[in-house]
Length: 165
Image (cartoon, rainbow, N blue to C red; front, side, top):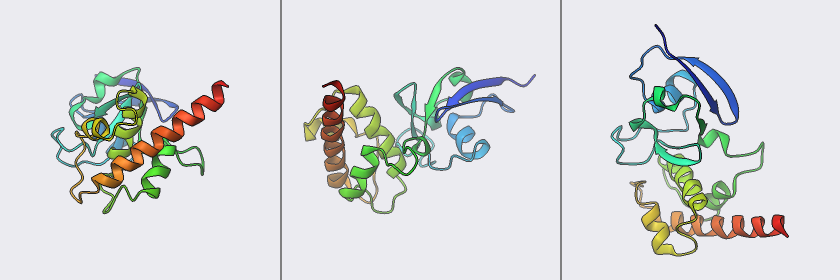
């Protein structure tokens, strides 16, 4: 018997027959669905390269069984931009050189989006660094990453204030 998953991935509802119930969310996204922005780094939940949002929460896709995500909303790096309009976090990463080789960048960006949504770090650089500590950058672009998260937080807060006014 082949289990079937009902997922909403980047806003699109999908029904997926899962050949192997042991498949991780990472493998499903990359190998079955071709969403290769989610990277396989350590495959042990230690580097954060595979970070995606599941129902708005940050998740290491390499540690999560795809089968356990039935009915959930998954957002990957491919689902952040709206057409040609970059998400504020993506734009801030570019503006602040929050990347070098770029391998970790999708996971860093997804983690930053989740961190900002959690509202725990605010504009405190130390709390941003702590909140992003599950994402490793081997090129050590941490200063740019922190600045990018702070700028995106400010921009998103300002946009939210304008919308509510």
